[in-house]
Image (cartoon, rainbow, N blue to C red; front, side, top):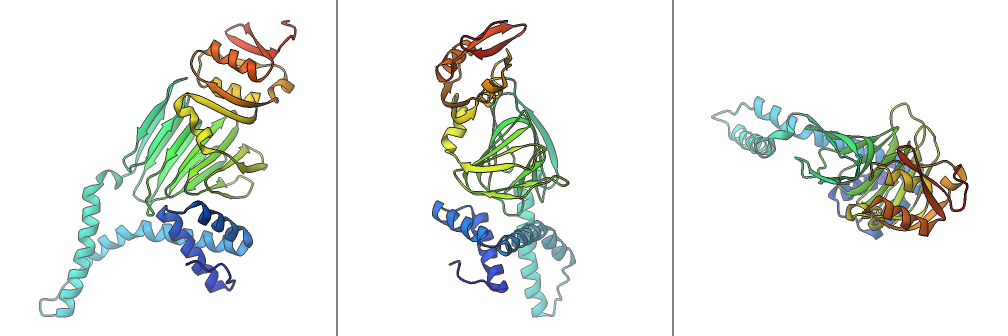
Length: 329
């Protein structure tokens, strides 16, 4: 049991190690996630101890297989020594485990990079070799590199849901602009459009931190939390969110709770070929709450007009949204 009442350095390190173990096991419930968040924010020293414990865990896990192989390579049992024979048995078992891991997952011993893209309006499910599943929204582009010690994704643009297979030996890192999202095993949504990043956690826990050279602080998110960040700025907000609503795009629905109209339009432009624009900045900032079913673009715009008083006007190759009753000139 994790003891939250102790504050000496040794106890803090022990608590940090215990939290890392629970997070990497992937079975942290809502109550425990709340307790972890409270412990982490109680003191900067707690956060520092957790960072150190997490780094040690990742380094140790990444080195386990190479160490086993080196021990197996160097074994030199003595025919007349019982101790030597016992050492041989122990090292042999370790080597056998290492060999079995290589046989089971040979594709993970050599780093491989793949790129996945979706057209506007296309949804695609990708199953990675490590067991993770990615659901890509329309107009998304990302690259995935699976290596022996890490799993790295770069989200160039668009939106995707990551259902990450638990693997304590290999952290899963998503790079999105000037921020990275680091996890071990969880489900979360990342949206990167028009210089704006959002991360919503459905299960497990993730850490969002600045990339090297970028300003800002790190955040740890638990289920039901959503982080929003404008690239190139230090302002970041974290608020409550319903993961089921955020992930509803996989079922052809977009759910909004006070998001600006500009964000709605950015999402719709990932679904339809005919581009939509907003010329009025005040209209673009108008908050929207409601559900849009994604089928025909004209029908979607008609439903949008029920949420905010707008009309759609053809302009060149696209559509311009204007306040209802505004001049067409």
